[in-house]
Amino acid sequence: MELNTSHTFTKQLPADKNLNNTRRQVLGACYSYVQPKKTANPKLIHTAKHFANSIGISEKMLTSEDFLKVITGNQLLQNTTPYAMCYGGHQFGNWAGQLGDGRAINLTDIIHDNKKWTLQLKGAGETPYSRSADGLAVLRSSIREYLCSEAMHYLGVPTTRALSLALTGDQVLRDVLYNGNPAYEKGAIVCRVAPSFLRFGSYEILTARKDYTTLKTLVDYTITHHFPEIANRNKADYLTFFQAVCNKTLNMIIHWQRVGFVHGVMNTDNMSVLGLTIDYGPYGWLEGFDYDWTPNTTDSEHKRYRFGNQPNISLWNLLQLANALYPLIEDAEALEIILNEYNTQFHHKYQQMMKAKLGLTSYNENDTELIKNLEANLHLSETDMTIFFRSLASYSKNDNINLKAILNPIKEAFYKPEEITGEIKKRWETWLQTYINRLAEEPYTDTERTSAMNGINPKYVLRNYMAQLAIEAADKEEYQLVDELYTLLQKPYEEQPEHQKWFAKRPEWARHKIGCSMLSCSS
Image 1 (spheres, one colour):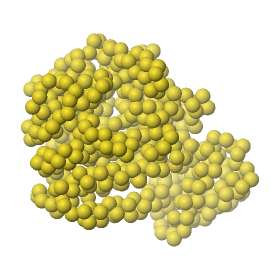
Image 2 (cartoon, rainbow, N blue to C red; image 1 turned 90 degrees about the vertical axis):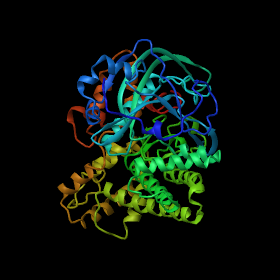
Image 3 (cartoon, rainbow, N blue to C red; image 1 turned 45 degrees about the vertical axis):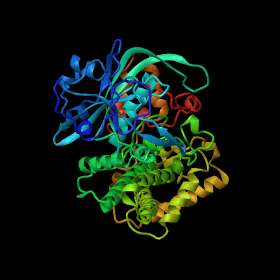
């Protein structure tokens, strides 16, 4: 299999001089050379054909034996030297020191249509950064990462991509809930793809070690290859670089809040410097709209990474990046100004995003209150976020308000319709009357507004129970549901009547089921 490979990362950044694949502290280097572990009996489950074609991998290549060998670690691309990246990070607010690619191995960079992409195998074996782990991944987490990466892309959310999903033929021991009950699971590998897998922690580790020479080398490399619009390499340009990372991060977080995505583990080592959603572990989409919801069992007590706190955590993480870059900038006030502006810009862009979800384009001084009251109402009784916003487009600015029927367009969003009585019902009726009156101010027709709302409020998202059904079927060697969900999620804003069954609230059986409501970092 021939691809147009590039080796800028390994040629332009310092390598670990120790070539032994042993767990250790790696100093003065951005990566370590490492070989993927050969797998016992690899089998291809699914490939992202459209994406593959866009990065120069033809359908013929995808079906070749060489492709299967490469994306399962059994064969290297010609003249390539795989490597694992060194980085640190703050985990749950505490500095964790060196972390690194403990179960990810970068195969190479490829260039297609003047764009550079890094091919990375997740679950391909141990590296110097694996600590006490085996560097492997299991089928359940691999299906979740594969489907979610592509689902997020088609939702318009900045993300890493997934090229392939394959079984290894090996058994992997995992303790799903960290409760002392490990069991063997099917091993799997996802080939992940991104312009770069550099994280906030890539810079943090160097500053923590006072390795400012390597820090400057890495920042200069990042600017040259990923922020070429920044011309020079001086203190002012490093400040511009930080501003650009803030802007990209803000854009990503706004999209997360728009579609109701909760990452679950926003440690600084899981934050892409390119503003991409990265490292799909215990993620989830909101079922009921709830600021306090987190899908991560590890975070269930303190809820640091809950839905409503994601904007605050992104700012906290950016502060850690600012601290890492400070030795190159030496201007705390300038960095603080950017961080304060980030906070201001978030509130502004969040209001813009919410107005778009409501189909509002004109200015009204009461819109902030309208949004605030809506979010309060959504917490009164469990209300499905996706169904609610998609159904809201059914209202017309020419509606003759009939209180008896005013709730009908959104009634399917309520998990417990019997609760929508008394004061709760009155508050919803009041809000909907205000909303319909507000729609009357809009210059666009209902048809135009509905089209715009349906272009920002998805009809289909990868709910955890959907992914779990695909996992359970795949565990029985039935992969049709993986393909069905992959196809469905390529067009999340379209009606797709043949897939209408997926436009539904989470089933009651999934409310407390492992994999549907309870997830851990175990993979």
